[in-house]
Length: 439
Image (cartoon, rainbow, N blue to C red; front, side, top):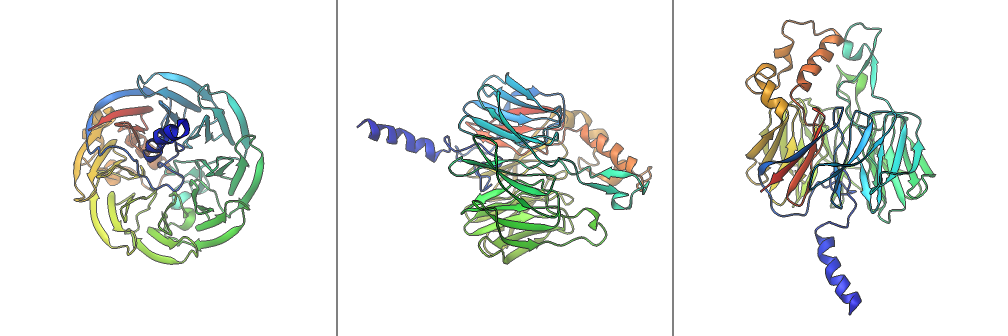
């Protein structure tokens, strides 16, 4: 009777995802679906927590704690009820990787070249694994900008690869700027295997039916056997003829119903057969980068685009476009779904709630920087690069840097939201983690 009683208690918890690992985009397949009440709108700020750097990391929420990385080199554990810091772990570099939590272990990467595993309750180091080094993508004279002999970081390369745990939690998988996908022992941090690609890996691996799916800056998308680390297949994306200096795959993959979905910098969103790697359909985004991770629910796939500011819905099987909604700026924040609503942020510092049937916005939440600075930075409430650079030399890299600094005053939301117990959590480039009540 005791065992039966325990199972009766356990099954509802499993149904609502409370015992599943807290990962980027809800689960290891990155479906983006949060099994929760049907929240559809914002109900006001619960709390906000300040770090000392921009927040590009996406939060993981587990056992009453929100975990988030910051450009100030730290990973934070924050009490979800009070917004107070539980602990802080400092690394030697910016933490643009998103944390993953499994049982009592939280794992993440840093620009110092290490991936870390910590005790999730205390923040005590369990192990760290040294990669071949982490860095942003870049090039001399990037996109023909001047001075042509100066090395320039890609200002839109925001993320490092975020780890995921295997189904039995024995292995942690993550990519690296050294071009490798790693599998390490989750208990010891010892290497099991690595797979070498031809470019940096800043995407998060997706685990589905025994395979890992990951994109690389070499323009290829890979399917790797999760146990052996051997290549199953690879798929070549394209390049934009005028900008091929830095092409590749920056969006992480999503897997569902025998398909794998991902976007690329070539301006396309792809739907492939997960077993064979054959193309099922693709969407042309008018040369806009697609950097968000797709969310999938009820036979529909949802994505955001960068330059065209669009949130789009497609039939997951046929690729038929079902609706589009235009935000106010670049979409790098991947959507989180409840039963009826998609939540995602844009580069102007606004978090949207869009109805999944109508494609219309229910409400939006703006961070303080947007409220203060929108009138001077935005044009007609919309991000317009040419508006801020009309009197400047666009051939200079310094113009891009200065313009991005202006954009940052808005508090752009690049972090992807997580939803737990009626609260949505997301980071902002203003340095805060926000907890906003939903209704």
